[in-house]
Image (cartoon, rainbow, N blue to C red; front, side, top):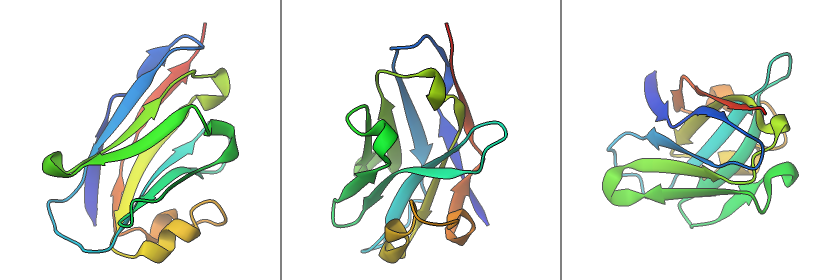
Length: 129
């Protein structure tokens, strides 16, 4: 199991912004799915955003228009820009990557976290006044 390394978490006030980063393996895959998950205390892990090798991105409804997933190829880094943060966004955030594009179709519909080949150990985001 290759562990990805997330960074950028912290504590912010409601309405604030954070940018999470995740260094992914420097392995060239022609096809891939990358995703951000989060898990709040007492809740199940949920998919937040996906980005596949076709350049398509998807988000859960609650973060649409506020979060943006992107990838810097030269830096092998996946990002999650989070704006207009709300208390409900408080959670541990995890990144994941896999050479299977099909996983991106399931991220919001099932427990696919364990199916990702590369997974991070999380970075904490706390939104509080």
